[in-house]
Length: 103
Image (cartoon, rainbow, N blue to C red):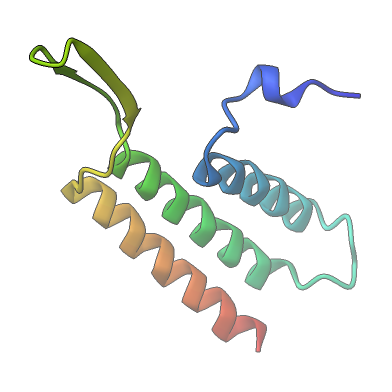
């Protein structure tokens, strides 16, 4: 069995969705399934990729130090950024375009 977890950081949902969207984009682009309409699925995969990229940008790794309590808090807290919202908007546009083309 492949050890994908050791190669990629798949601990958060947006990293998993990025990996799945790249796989769907590749499958649709190579036309591995002839019955699969490739253009709408490529738009959908691109939309999911950009939404995940925006969420990854908006959740940077941070360390907060509380000297009065003598503790460090590690985590991925949400800090909105302009580039993250731009990625989210691009992704939403691609995703909606893919849905319109699919139906």
